[in-house]
Amino acid sequence: MSGIFGVVSSGDCNELLMLGTDYHSHLGTEYGGIAILGDTFQRQIHNISQSQFKSKFFEDYNEMKGNKGIGVISAFNEQPIYLNSKFGPFCLVTNSLVENKKELAQELLDKGISFSEFGGDKSEGAINETELIAKLITQETELITGIEKMFDKIEGSCSLLLLTRNGVYAARDRYGYSPLVVGSRDDAWAVTSETSAFPNCEFKIEKFLDPGEIVLLNEDGMAQRRAGKKKNQICSFLWIYTGFPASNYEGVNTEIVRERCGRCLARHDNDIDVDLVSGVPDSGIAHGLGYAIESGKPFRRPLVKYTPGYGRSYTPPDQATRDMIAKMKLIPIKEVIEGNKIVVCEDSIVRGTQLKNFTIKKLWEAGAKEIHVRPACPPLMFPCRFNFSTRTTHELAARKGIRAIEGHDPEDVSEYLDCNSEKYQQMLDWIAKDLNVTTLRYQKLKDMVKAIGLPKENLCTYCWDGKYLKADD
Image (tube, rainbow, N blue to C red; front, side, top):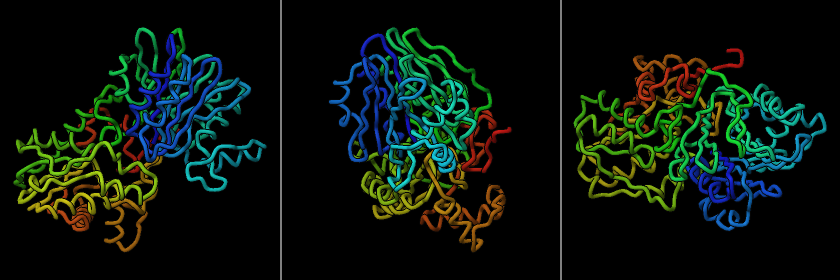
């Protein structure tokens, strides 16, 4: 996943660009990049896997001058891309996942078009996805048409910001899997993946872009270049895990949704008696607060995150890094844990290895009497098609349980999607035993959708139920 931010101001935009981009640091862990347009295009990209965005770009942004700029925090590809094209020079940042990347790249190679940037895995022949998108756009005779045709060609998702001498073009994914929001203040216009970038930079929200909508931001303000569509499939996981608590998507705040998720979990827990409620830091905290409010049980912190040194354990691309962060970031407080029956609210169970080895284990070792795990979403059943998160069915905790029950990977898992079925309960029992917890109870899909507060047809729930909009829908 990636977070993108763009700004056009009446004076130099360098400080606003750095601050706004930095507010997306929770969305990526590998690369940061900014591009500013003054007399010329200026671009910097740094690896931020072992350092914070601000520390890497502090000296750069002071030297880069101009009133237009775009920035990105990326989990995979080095960005921004610079391209001198028939439309004129431009820089590009994307939040994307292109499932047919290899096929599209080969089509361009067959036409004699070359690629110069490294792909995310640095292997020979790997294609940088943002460069691929840039070159797909330039296949058409006009920029806006190029963006629209690119949307038609890719399988997956792509929201983008494109910096030109005309201003910053912002284009939201045609099904709205990832958000883009435009804001303004007296001396500047900005566009962001996360509305949490706006308050401290003194922007007010002007528009949540529609799926497929393209706008241009420049010194004159915002101008629509293509109208969007109302068919929306925004990622539900933004509210459950990936989004920042202060961010709003489609006008719905993340913290409030998480509190509602926790409240709903508590309403289904009349059969257990616990001493305290907790949330796995950071994203599980609001779920736990909601549970505590609804249940009347005290919210306490048996595990605290050493915030300055460690980011999210979900976003790094390799398992070894994920495990190291998961082990080191959470510190148990024995005095809170010992002898207590504890509800542990978690945003989700993806692979299950970190929860089992680096959360549950720490609680037992510190003397917990009972551990009741409550994920805020249903079991994850399908690897994400639209962003960089889970990439294979094999790694999902729920699928491990199904394999153990069936002895193989069945093609039809519909029985396991029904939370009232015997197969679902068998899967639940297997996961609970594997995690070594007293009880395990997942959120129901209908309750999660209700907590978000948008119609089910406007949400992508593919990773839970395998359903998504297709090109002809």
